Length: 147
Image (cartoon, rainbow, N blue to C red; front, side, top):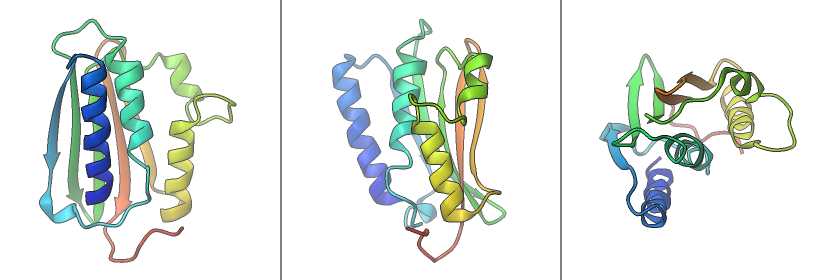
């Protein structure tokens, strides 16, 4: 988890420079979860979508991105939230479908399910003009994820 978050912080730093610091970032991290092993490049597509499709398309000020890490009942919850434009209902239905473009969310969800089972993966909550919350659920365990 620690390495994944370091990579995300570097990615966000680049995006802040490219967008002239057009959004704020907040990290809410439980330190005890930072050593949890997770698959590589799980967060980047989620954060990229939040910035590219949520925040850049929003007129709301201030634009805000929140990355939160918490634990409940043996499950680690990684939340990526933005207060951007939200995902239209017609696009929400196609996020996990087999499409030739926009496969980042689908790919992450499939990798999580392969690593941890069908009962885990992504949850997406979105509301027009209010933003999107993507929740990644990972079991708390000492074992590494399946490759």
